[in-house]
Figure 1 (tube, rainbow, N blue to C red):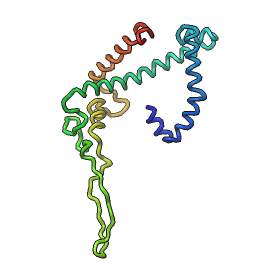
Figure 2 (figure 1 turned 180 degrees about the vertical axis):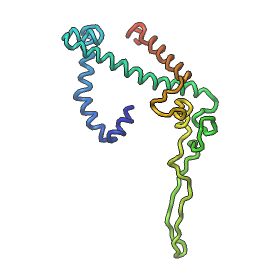
Figure 3 (figure 1 turned 45 degrees about the vertical axis):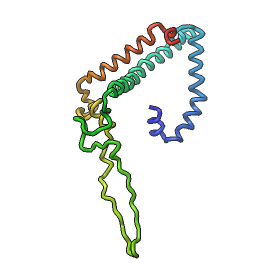
Figure 4 (figure 1 turned 60 degrees about the horizontal axis):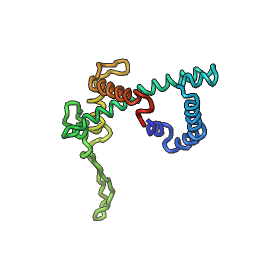
Length: 193
C-alpha cells in the first residue's frame, strides 16, 4: 500500500513531507501510546480513560480503527496464502497463458518484445524503418490475469454493486489467516517471546 500511495501522491517528492510528519508526529505519538500502555498495564480504552475520562473515546477510536485495518490486511495476507498454496504446482499457474482464465491479450513474460526504431541513410537514399509490432498497450501479463481473473474473478463482476458468489478458496485462506492470528495472540505477548 505504501508504494502505491507514494506513486499516487507525487512519487519521491511525497517522501519528504512523509518523513517530516513521521518524525514530528508519527513516531512521538507511537511512543506516547506505548508508554501509556506500559505505565497503566491496560488496553487502549482503559488507558485513555484513566488519563482523562473524556479521552475514553480516543481508546474506542483506536480499537475500531485497528479492527477495520485488520479486515483489510488479513484479506491481503489471505491472497498471499492462496498464492503460497498455488506455488506447490510443478508449473506455476501465473507464468503461462494457456489456462482457462486467460484472454487472447495475455502475454507471458518471455514474450515481452523490445524493439528499436531507427532512421538510417543507405547509399545516399533515406531509409525509414518502421515497426510493425502489435500494440502492447492492450496486452496483460500472465500474472496479472491470474490474479484478476483466476483469484478474484473480476471478469464475472458487473461492478461494485455486484458482489458475486463466495470464493471458497479465498474464504478458507482468510479463515486460516484468522486462526493463525488467534493462536498467535491467544496467550498474549508471552507467546511471541
